Figure 1 (cartoon, helix red, strand yellow):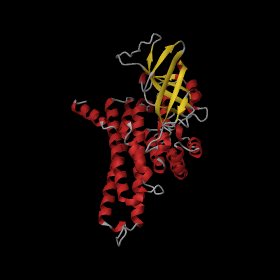
Figure 2 (cartoon, one colour; figure 1 turned 45 degrees about the horizontal axis):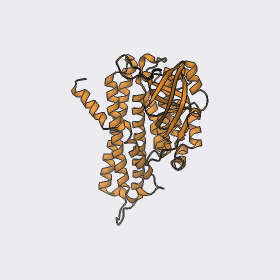
Figure 3 (spheres, helix red, strand yellow; figure 1 turned 180 degrees about the horizontal axis):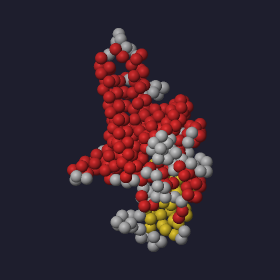
Figure 4 (cartoon, rainbow, N blue to C red; figure 1 turned 30 degrees about the horizontal axis):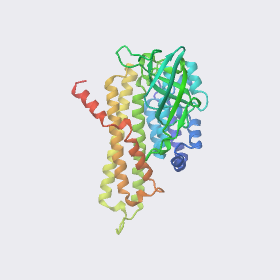
Length: 383
């Protein structure tokens, strides 16, 4: 695949930043993306960054996807989070038959959102029936389709098992009109993501609207992107969002320091040696985190495209780099926030929301400390 595929998406994302930044307050207040922002993301094809080229998507390499989210996150974290979530959800198209994928992703707005793995669906003739409620569906308020990852039971209620004895899990897909959305997302950060709950009652899902997620043997697309899988794509994407938030917060502090006089001080913050040193060290921390994340993603992608395989060492490396990057980004935001002093606590200044957004990101599954344990266990086992 051409390494430059999707490069113009980064430029489009950068060009949309002023619009998104201008809508950020409205997004926060509405607790969902505003219509102008959603329309701009759709018009510029950003929701289709990871959609297969066979369906009119960009099928862009991870680095392009990460740069897109980084640019959007500099303007508004909630917008970047929703875009990242729905873009990765679109990767399920690689495991659907062409007509089904076309029906979902090529009828406007063509946006899919889903939540966490939960509950069961019962196999019936021609498909599955499900009654359940799921949580954490970021981007669901813009979506035309919803998905859910469910354990499958037979008609007798007995759990279906994979060959290795693990529960069989399928991803089911259904129009948003088939579900009831519950307005539950009242959070300290990422407030505009509309990460709500959704519920289905005795809903029939035809077989063709189901798929095995992240199962290489179930793929219908041959591109290396889909061997990466949604789990690692989420990790890289949300780590990139954290970098964008950290970059914007530190830049705001630098701009403040260039002009602000500290209380009872006779010189500007920019002339304070302590501030200068802290800015330098924090800038180094942020650049190091970004370099590590992108180097890991790049090495993994080169290996994957050359070998055609996404192996456990790749997954471990991506998880470690993503988790560490989110934690480093949170440290950068904390440092920048505290350097800004009392200025940072006011909602009309560019610190308070980013501080809350960053700490909401750091509470998500991609930033769990247990990821370090998993990686450390593999290292000590010699894997």
